[in-house]
Amino acid sequence: MQADYKHDHFHGKFTRTQVDLMNKFRLLWEQHDVWTRATIVSLVFALPNVDPVTARLLRNPEDFEQVLQPFYGRRLAAGFRELLREHLVLAADIVVATKAGDENAAAEAKRLWYINAEEIAEFLGRINPFWSRREWRRLLFHHLDLVFDEAAFMLGGQFQASVDVYDEIELQSLVMADTMSRGIIRQFNLR
Image (cartoon, rainbow, N blue to C red; front, top):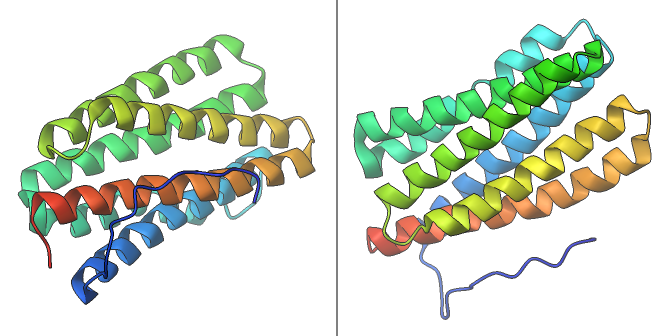
């Protein structure tokens, strides 16, 4: 493990409900990472599986929506789904434009990607008093930086560096998963 991410651990024991929720978010964020990486690989190397891999990646926002809906209702859960879907589409746009050598399109997609991350942070900070917009902005921007590096290394043929960054992405995503589950546990006093 390369990075040492700090966690604000709850003290005491977790209930089955709390553990189940934490596991759901850890799985969702891990799937987010795995299918993002698979899509990047498929796009970079023009693999014939790009369409089904991308479709699976775009299912991730829907899976988040299903987990969030019991807590936040249909409208807010769908709002998160759309923001996360935009995040994924913009990431693919950056890879496609960079691979094609279109620096202007890549820069514009990257600019929009960070605006989208700001919108996600604002959204999460608004719906849960235990989720800070500032903390989510920090987490999401770090996530974008890592994913961008992962794709850039892959496009540049620096495959070991891409693997090394992916290890950090996995750890960082667990922090996002735990932040998400802790906020819901506190907001809804889950036992």
